[in-house]
Image (cartoon, rainbow, N blue to C red; front, side, top):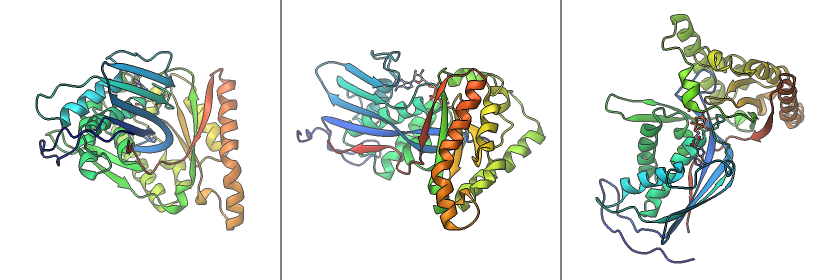
Length: 348
Ligand SMILES: Nc1ncnc2c1ncn2[C@@H]1O[C@H](COP(=O)(O)OP(=O)(O)OP(=O)(O)O)[C@@H](O)[C@H]1O
Ligand SMILES: N[C@@H](CCO)C(=O)O
């Protein structure tokens, strides 16, 4: 391991002094946005992670392993690299050139499936840009800078907020000047052990296309329906009363239109029929996310609860796979927990 080179030691645009690094490694979680009714404002981080390593080099290069290795570009149009340049430019001395770098991307998050792959790239790349300039993304100050940049790039903050801060985040555009706000919703101990059972279809659904399906206007009845459910899902997680997701995961703003593309509601019904508290279209889809277990997973004595929690995710998963198969939809099952940490930076 080489010692970091001492390049930059002065204040930059409100940032603390920093010592530039030769190489950095960033880990960023998958995220499930919307969570049913919280369109463009609720999102939760999950324990599937992409890893990005960036090191100074003689020339640009990029290596990709894992998800998307067969299809993602290996030139300077790669999303990680574009995000890295944004983060580097935002944290370097004015006019400093972008240095040639080698990127190594290890992807566990499948692209364009509703698990926040684009936000993960954005957050990892911008964080790596700051970190190469010596700014530590573990500090609140840098995370907040990264959040504003990433939310502005995405246009909606519901994936980038949990990808950066972890846990369950409630975020929105705060004012006309383009400032975004995010707040962590505390997750009750009874809900922390819940499992997200994810059915990830084999087909991609780019967010841009999924947003184009939405109606430009909504009725007052649908707005009231969603306000009540969005408040309920926040209450369910913060009180630990996950069975409230039966109502709290319902939506009328985006799932009806997106669910017309594929058997979304058959999978939601299969999951809840098999014991999930509730299920939603993850992000813009097509992944379906069912929340299962946690200490509130069943009534009765503690021992009975524990026994049910062990098996419920598998039963729900099996039911989702069977429903997909019956509808001739191929895909795979992923089980994840709630990620509390958000983006993480390795000391290298
Ligand atoms: N690991 C990656 N490396 C480089 N680019 C990626 C990677 N993952 C995703 N992308 C880019 O992001 C695009 C997918 O973004 P999109 O917003 O459509 O889906 P998503 O972020 O997975 O879903 P959602 O926003 O609904 O959770 C890909 O087509 C690709 O351009
Ligand atoms: N809120 C976003 C999440 C996907 O980026 C949407 O549903 O389009």
